[in-house]
Image 1 (cartoon, one colour):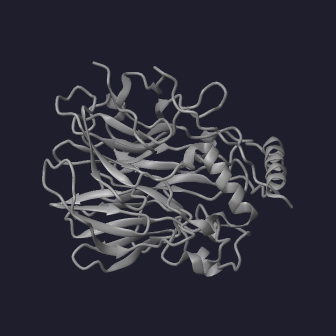
Image 2: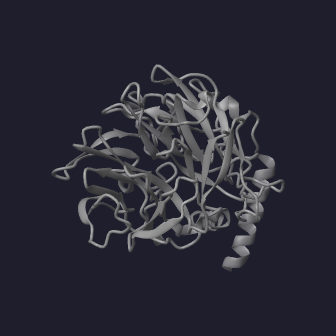
Length: 437
């Protein structure tokens, strides 16, 4: 069959599927410590409900929560995804997109998904660089912008330990020498450890954070598929958080069964590592809720064999009941298909009191849910080191009245002034959320 005709048929089928399968629950039903989990709705063709990426009209911006205001910290960036604040207040932004992964687009499903992601704003070439933004006069706008690192391979996570800057590329963890105040690094990076990559590399983003004493690095590695359909041999070392010894590069699996962990941060009261995880698709608009969770050493969180503890996913073959019996449920759901990526705690925040203790989460937004979910930044209140209560919207209005995406939030971080910075990879901006004076 001619590819153009095939595409039309598949997209028509996707439209019909979107019309015939839609949510019966609210996003809030799939939120909290005990989300509602309806029976799977495994349709022949999955729901495809794309919010086409269009960017922000002149003068437009998201809507900030009461008591806060939003402005552009930096504009005209090229697919900014992730943020890191250096000790002197400089902000690093990873301008990045997927690396070449030809095997990920093979077959009808892979080819269609490539087109879907392209329409959602993820089809542009990767700039493969990290840019430094500096707001020396503290007026809330970065007046200095320099290329800090370039010629990388789809960089994402960044962390500084002493004068060693670590960058998680899509296939390796690199170390660079950093001098305080430097606006660029010209030296080549030193490989610390290879990370799962290759020509498939389905969930390509890799994040990295350091332990409090700096001796260990924790690297998130997403799965190579939705639910193991590319074969479990393709999942070696994936759907996991690695612990890497900073001195030797030796590594072990710290926790597994995490389909696509992205954001990682240390909860300030308990000292525990938390992560934001994207769960599986294609079993209905209400399944499966994405989540944030504390990460327990040696724990298994279910993927691909089960979700939310021991709810078996019958699509996976072969099954593994022994491993399912060990699966633990995550701590807190943040809504089905919200694509919750960014995660940072409020430590150092100068936003209003309701945002003083808890986690900010950047929700990139759904494609496999009708109606849409995500496309906003939320705040989950914490008490005693654990989530307490319902999320609060921090930044909304990323979709226009026609359900098109003017922006999509990704990384979130508290800057040196106590404001919240949000990377917007469709709007090509970094937004700054601050308290109303």
